[in-house]
Structures are given as C-alpha cells and as structure tokens.
Image 1 (cartoon, rainbow, N blue to C red):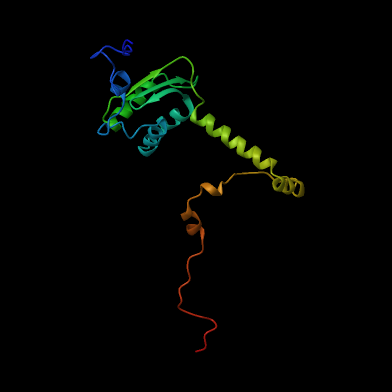
Image 2: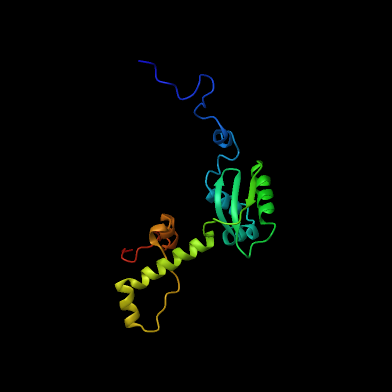
Amino acid sequence: PAPAPSAAPAGRGVRPGSGPQAALAPTPDDPLVAYGQFDAVVALIRERRDMRLLVEVETCLKLVRYSPGRIEFEPTAEAAPDLAARLAGRLQDWTGARWGVSVVSGGGAPTIAQTRDAAESAARTAALDNPLVKAVFDAFPGARIDALRHPDTRPETAAASEALPEVEDEWDPFEQD
C-alpha cells in the first residue's frame, strides 16, 4: 500500500501558534495582557476617573468585537462623532500601547447601560412576583419599592461597618464596688 498523503508538504505547513491570530495574541510581557476582556477596559476608564468617557462608553457604545488592543463598536444615535478617536487616544495614553478603535454600522450588542437596566428591571419584576412582597403590598396599598438590595453581593465587611461599635469593658453595672 502507498503511504498516506500528508496534510501539507514538508516545510510549508502552518505551525501551531503561528499565523495572523498568534501574531495578534498578547504575550505575557505585552502591556495589553491585563485587558483580556472589555470589562477590564471599562474598569480602567473608571479607575482613571474619566467620567465623561465612562458615561459615553456605558451608554453609547454597542460592542461588536473585542480583543486586547482592538475594539469594534456600533455607536448609538446619541454617540459623539469623535468617541472612537477619544477612546483610542485615552487608552493609548493610559496603557502605553496602540489601540485600534473602529466604528461599524451594525451587529452591536446592547450597551452596558441597557444590559444593567434590563437586569434591574428583571430583578424588580422578580421581587414583585414574590409572594411575601405581594402580601406586603396587599397589607399596605400605598407601599412602593424604592431600591433593590442583593445581600449575596454585599462584601462581608459591610455588615461589620454597619454594626454598633464594640463597648469597652470599663464599667459593669452589675459589679459590686
């Protein structure tokens, strides 16, 4: 029997870890390695306290594609025309690496604000569907929900900070003099 043909001639095959995708992948010493997810970019903007840019990114940027150093987004109708240029410039200033930020005409996911609002609306609906909450509303017709708190997302230190301060053992009312 004849030997099976190889998938690629010797010396012409594509090695694993080579090619355009490997060339674009961040290396451990790359300044972009810390920005593997778009959430890390948003956290950087928040950390640098550029509130105008943060609000615009959260409300006007519908993410289409993200990779470290590359952002493609669909702008909302309210987006400033220079959002892509300002975002790229700020990220380059802050990270020391060049960022490609481009605008595309479609395919964007909901904005961060839209996602947050949808989650809040779903939580409010779930709270209103709770039998205990329904009973409270029946007992108190003018009641309303002002805020939702999620105890499982509170840090453990929150309870300690809300607790009463510890009393010093200086005086005991039951102790006989």
